[in-house]
Length: 355
Image (tube, helix red, strand yellow):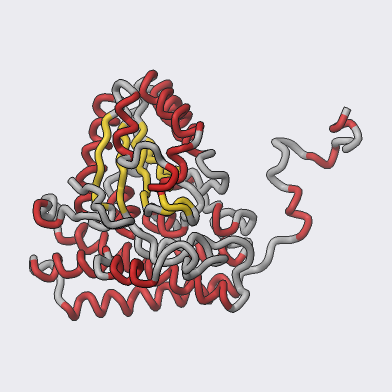
């Protein structure tokens, strides 16, 4: 099990005591490809943002790919995923077409949210991907609601809820934990603990720095800390939590220590005001993709040539996604009024709405 080291923002790994989890070679390669696709996708998104093709907010995921791949790949099709605003790669890992994700970033009609959500609001109901949510912590109680609905309908599906470390000091976090523990709801909470809530070091604001310890306040809530830079260690922890949720209808909390290489958003791409370049470079030595690649090569699952071919393949896929997004139409201006009311708003006297 991974723990926080004394060095700020650093993680200690589980690589030495995690095997390949008994996964077949196709699944091991699939996880690597998803991580590579996520990295190349975000690099292309950064390029498009810098050239003005993407507007608004844009929060990139580079460095955290092992969390998405480790958490989402063990899920069944009928399970649910709900997340925060750093959601591009999570959507892709869940199965959303990269073309639809890129088109959403471009604000085009072929985006997975019709071009109306942008970077922070990827959504696909057909995949039970219940969206990215821009308000910090707002989706955590919604995850509890999904868990309640699953229990009410007597289904054995689970809800995976991902969020950042800044959420743990907010009220919605504790409200949702209390409800899921009290009502024994099948929710797996995963904190993508990259040490910086926006630009604030977690050590400066958290009275309990080992975030997994917070679950001890809630009976029936299991917790674990894991090295989120290690996709297999992450998957092992999440698989256990999913089994607990599915079979025992009980929630779990996993604190996944990871590190984002970019800033909080494209508004601070280098994050140079609150961390040093040396710190970032030190963490790049523990790159989740390259360390996993080495393990698969050492195990004979892939070769160097396989990896290079896979990289060329995902680069081509991302380039085609960008071409698709550029060719997609922009939403009609009249569509701004859609999805605001459950019914047809045009028959409403707007003056009556304020009475």
